[in-house]
Image (cartoon, rainbow over all chains, first blue to last red; front, side, top):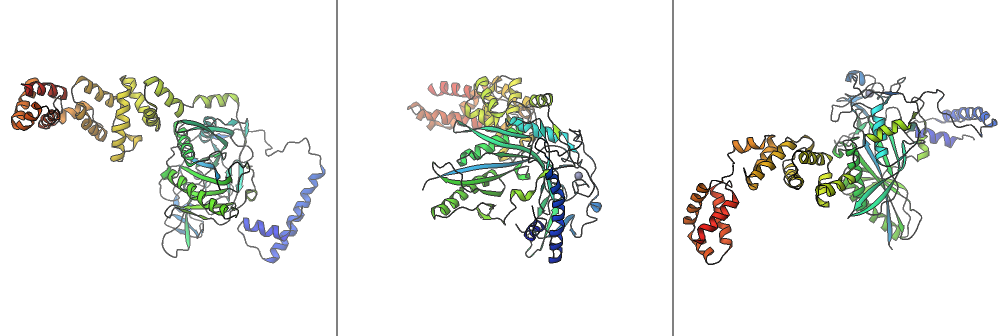
Amino acid sequence: MMIDKDEVEYIANLSRISLNEREKDMFVHQLNDILSYIEKLNTLDTKNVKPMAYILKVSNVFREDKLETSIPIQDVLINAPSTKSGFFKVPKVIE
Amino acid sequence: MTYEVVIGLETHAELATVTKLFCGCSTQFGVDPNMQVCPVCLGMPGVLPVMNKKAFEYALKAAVALNCKIDEFTNFDRKSYYYPDLPKNYQVSQNYHNLGADGYLDISVNGVTNRIRIHNVHLEEEAGKLIHPEEVGADYSLVDFNRAGVPLLEIVSYPDMRRVDEVESYMQTLRKILLYTEVSDCKMQEGSLRFEASISLRKKGCDKLGNRVEIKNLNSMKSVLKAIEYETIRQRDVLDRGETVGRETRLWDEVNEKSARMRSKEESQDYRYFPEPDLLPVLIDEKWLRAIKDTIPELPLARRQRFIEGFALSGYDASLLIDEKILADFFEECVKILNRPKAFCNWITNDLLREVKDRKLDIYHLKIKPKQLAALVEIIEKGTISSTIAKEVFSEMIQTGKDPKTVVEEKKLVQISDEGLIEAIITKVISGNPDAVEDYKKGKKNALTFLVGQVMKETKGKANPKMVNELLEKKVRV
Ligand SMILES: [Zn+2]
């Protein structure tokens, strides 16, 4: 599998980031390097191996439905570039 | 050309937990913006989610109540998309191993039962809430994360519905099941129950499904039905022109009652689902599943049947009662105290529901209690008050929560059954209305009704109507 410039632009768009031409070329190279490295796994026979998403033999970890204190509003908004009356203010979202 | 309409519904229900899915923040509705958030639900770097057991069990309970197959293994996946209401830029949801699959829901339309298959039931987290200011030229949106991370149940039906009445019954039945199992409060006005419809048309007799159109922003059951009707006509016109319906998502405009195409959305492969590494899988053994099954109460259709058979109620009355679980519970409490099912059914489905509607009362916090309604029925039977006066007493009871006896005493409403007293009033009425008496003697039967009315008026409705009738008849015949 090869990644071309269209693919990089497509992924950038999904991630809502803008890339300049130099960056696009750079990512084409980097992503292809990563993919060809991962390709090595295809030389293994995995016909009888189930996909594994979890390496620990642990399951069913829960917490009780118990109320905990939330954090103060000034801490909530402390890193926000822009706020308004307790809200995070973001560029207009067009539906 | 005749077309068949093919409809499927996606339902989202916020689960009735005290805290969010992955953190201890409150899920309470209507609080000031961003007051119920913490590093976990704000998606701060380095935080780890821990699953709320109750939320998981509620989801499991709903899946069982909807007759789903429950796999022993379930896990969670990340659904990636970028939107300002999603702090982590992915939503923890389920894709590869849904909690429940291949269930069904039996609906009833005009007495005919129909089975709608459920594709899957899964658990996910809510997004935050976006507010678009109404001021002209505003170039910003506001984000409130109080809702972010609230446990959300998604129920996906198969496209098994063909008509709006089936859709309506599906929504009502599903809502009732969620309320009966007490997994969600289903308040549509607070957004805790939401529907999205997908609609496609195909030529009658054709097996292949047409391109489906999804409709979002449906704020009430009424708008779901309206949007489906609108979309049916729109697609029919497109097809009649010989064109093809595009696969798209449309937004329903409540005010103008029409839908508009939404900016093109990601395709499902663009969500790049992959197992959520921050959460461990959940294994559901037989014992746990059995314990969950044991918590499922009698469901609405079964309860309706029991009301018809056990209390000799009509199908119509039984449907009215089971419509709201809280009312059916109220009814059963009353019957337990006093075995008069028909009387209680009448009070609840007529007077109680009318008062609730007229006075905009909250049926979940009624002041009147079952034992008080039972006491009211008892004093009517004893003849302490007439059934006309009882309505006045009931109205006072539902407003104040007072016992019927207290209301009767305070308002001096005890029925007059003193023969001498009634006779005295009758004499007065007769002498004041000689024409009516004459009419009656000439054979005009309804003249008596008029005279009875006059006596009741004199006694402010408190005279025992049966006695008034008998005594009057005796008097005027003379
Ligand atoms: Zn939180």
